[in-house]
Image (cartoon, rainbow, N blue to C red; front, top):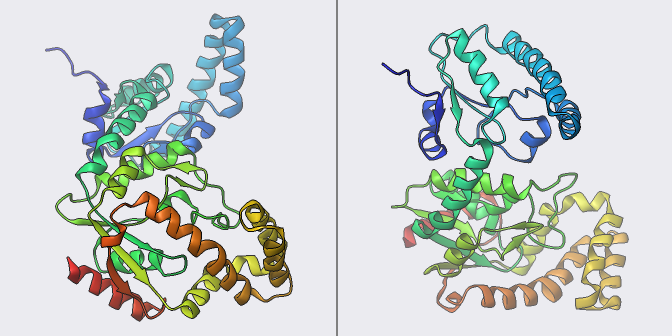
Length: 354
C-alpha cells in the first residue's frame, strides 16, 4: 500500500486547522512578524541574517548556497527539537509551512517524520494560505448579517460593541484589529499598525468564526482605517447593510468620553499639536492654532469640544452620508453616557430591537 502523502493542499488544511496539534511556521522571524497563519508558532530554520546571507550567495553560486544553507537548517532544526520535542508524544500532528512549501518546510517535515510524528507539509506554503485568505475575503462578508453602529465622534460606538460582546453578541471590532481609531488622532500611543497582510489574516480568522444565522455587530468605517485598507467586499457589505443604528449622546458626555480615550495626549501636548497640523488645509491656520493653544495651556475639555463640534461632526456626517446610503432609515439609540451601566442598558435595548 502506498504511504499517505505528507503534503496537504491549502484549502483542505485551512478547513481543518483545529485538528492539528500545532502549526509550525519555519520562515524567518521577519517573515513571521509580517503575517502568519493564525495560531502558528515560529520555529525558523534560518534566522533573518542567515536567510539574507544564503539568499545573496544563491545569486552567484546556488551549489555553495545550498551547502551552507543545509548546514544552517540542520543546526537550527536540531536546536528546535532540543527545545520543544521532549514532551511531545508519538501521535503529535503538526502542520508545517514555509514561504512556498519548498525546502525549508520540507526539511522540518522530514525530520519530524523520521522521529515518528504525524507531520504534514502545507502545499504551496504561506503563498497558498495567502491566496485562500484573499479569495475567502472576497465572498465571506456577503454571507454575514452585518448590523452597523453609526454616530458622531464620542458617542460610544466602540464601547457599545464591547458591551454587546460581553452579553454574548457576535462583534467585529475593526479598529481593535487595525490598532487605530480611524481619525487624525487615531494612532495608538507607541504602537504601530499591523501589516496589511496581518490585518487581512485577523479579519479572515474572525469572520470565519461567526455563525451566519446570527447578527454581527460592527462599527461604521470608511475604506481605510489609518494606513490599512478594508477588503472591498467587506466595505460594500457594510455600505449595503439594511441594519443601521444611529447612536446619540449628550455633548457633555461625549467630551468626557473623548478625554478618557485620548488621555495619552495630555502628557504629550506637542504630539497632539503635531497631529492637528494635518487639519490646517481643511479648517484653516487660525482655527487649528486656537485648538493647539488650548491643548498647550491644559484646556483639554474645550480643545476636544471644539474639535468635536467644528471638525469631526461636520466631516463625519458628510462622509457617513456618502458611505451609507440607507442612513436616513437608521434606528435611533440614545446613550446617557459611556458608563458601564448605560452601555449595558443600551446593548440590551439594541439586542431587543432584533
